[in-house]
Image 1 (tube, rainbow, N blue to C red):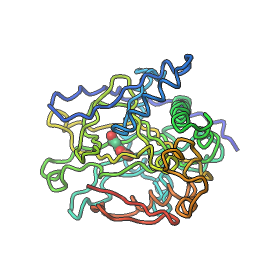
Image 2: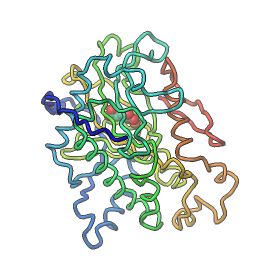
Image 3: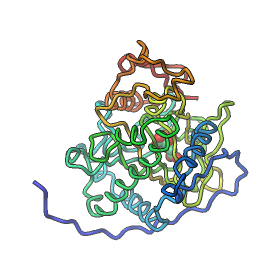
Image 4: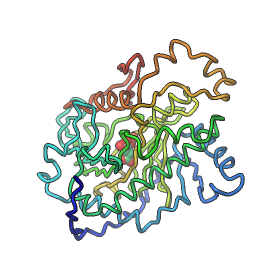
Length: 372
Ligand SMILES: O=C(O)CCC(=O)C(=O)O
Ligand SMILES: [Fe+2]
């Protein structure tokens, strides 16, 4: 039964955007793609070309002109900050924790529960992942705190997927598929592991960071279809270039940083690559800041498979054959299966070890879980 009790909003801390660093860092050249022309005649085709170029150079790109205002984004940060300021007992109730044993990422992940790379240094990340606001997922964990801001949080979640859906339309154009080929695999109303995430990294003493190569989040690719990350000024996120160098993702005013996840890489038979990235200790002028982030992780619909799409472009490039071959048939793993296995393999441990060169299997798919 739907409860008619509405919770009163709480007073929130006023989150302030930190100043960008003045450190001289090696920045990645991230394309900024302005979506305000999306609905203009020829707009999608032009944006699709910009996107193709961006994905082939760095794999990360920033979108602007999205309709999200700075005010509402800062408000989301304040909501995130208000949540993380709650007492640990409230955030960490057993029924509200991520169930990593099941590969279930919904709910709260506390910091300081995992040792890093065989040392005694503990991980410093707290996050909370909120499922789509649909009746089919109403049983997934959600803290009462967020129900106090229901209209704003739900609105943000829904509009995030609307934006992602535009990006999926461009991916479909790039691959010469029907425009809704990918967006139809990511309907807001379908069950999936999509989540809106608030995430905070707590600074560690320099001596501890030194023992773990300054790693705050080890190198990985994202498991889903597409990640949206509201651009933030605290440097630390780095991407691995084709040449194997680490470059910082720069702040982009009013931008949302996006990157392709593993599922999109599978659908596009590797044409759209899921880029390896990591987070390291910020530069000296920002190393005291509790680094708060807002994300929307788009995951493939639970029942969709992640086999390569029947794309004329991929055929011409020889990346797929007319008939699905054995290898491709093996890739008929579902979105749910893939994401759950990845989350379990990544998180259901008490130690984050170095995984460079190690592989594991989802169905018959062999996955390399890189960590530099
Ligand atoms: O905190 C960041 O900037 C990136 C985090 C990230 O890559 C992830 O949570 O998948
Ligand atoms: Fe990531």
